[in-house]
Structures are given as structure tokens and as C-alpha cells.
Image (cartoon, rainbow, N blue to C red; front, top):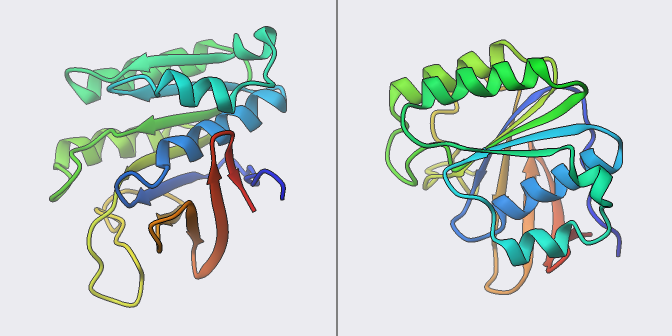
Length: 189
């Protein structure tokens, strides 16, 4: 088994996840990959990722590489936080990935002001943007619904599901699925 790796193309990705299935872990794994490839990461969330999970995923990342990981606390007005995030991203060299984790309420419709702020971020970027939020119940053939998928101007929609009660996960990228296993060190396939 090997670590799952993302292909970077400077697109914006709307990742909808089932609750407690590893969305933050997937984001951290993509951040790790970015750092090991020489890029810089901006991580914005209401809370920092779990320290134990972070240390497992970043175990082989050197202190020099880790210094290119910048965490920003998303509290208060999201539009102001997005403005600060954009200023930071444009001021720092070699920003390759910006992650917004848990940027909206866990259920219900995503408020229009949040959608507008996220779309502003997407419009002004030249790096890969990963938006991680809880998905909703799907009424069609997909296993999960990406909430506000017709309002958020992302290039791609990914779904991360937990089809069984074990560590198996399925990452849906468009109509393709990738079977993954969630380990302490991240996702493998």
C-alpha cells in the first residue's frame, strides 16, 4: 500500500465529506504532500487540526518544510478572514495550497454570505484551493451531496464517504471512485 497523492493543477476543489470520515485528515495529507514538494500551505479553520493526527501525518516532514505551513483561525466575519487570507497568500512566496476546513455550518443550507466569501477566494487565486465541509443527504445516485454545489464556483466537486463502519473510505472525483484506507499516517490505497 502507498499513500494516496493528489494531482495539483491550481484548481478549486469543493470536498464534501460524511461526518467523522477523515476530511481534515485528507486535507492534512494534501498539505503534507505540498510541503514535501517545496510548496507553501495556508490552512484556515475555526480550530486547528488535532495535534496527535497532525503529528502522525507530518512525522516525516522536516522543521524547515514545516515552517511553510501557516494556520489561520477562522473566527468572526468570514469575509474579513478571507480578505486576510488573500493578503497573506499574496504576500508569502510560493503558496501552492490554501485549505478552508469547516468554513460553514455542518448542516442545512450554506448561508449566502459564506458562499460569496468563498467565491471571492476562488476568483482571486493562482494556487490549489481545497474547501472542506460536511455534505448533505443525497436524493440521487450519488452517495453524498455537496451542499451549495451550484452556488460555489469551484472547478471540481469531490465526495469522501464511509461506506462501512471500518477504516475503508471512498473518494469520489467526478464519476470515478478511489478506494482508500484511513490509517494514523493518512490515507493509503
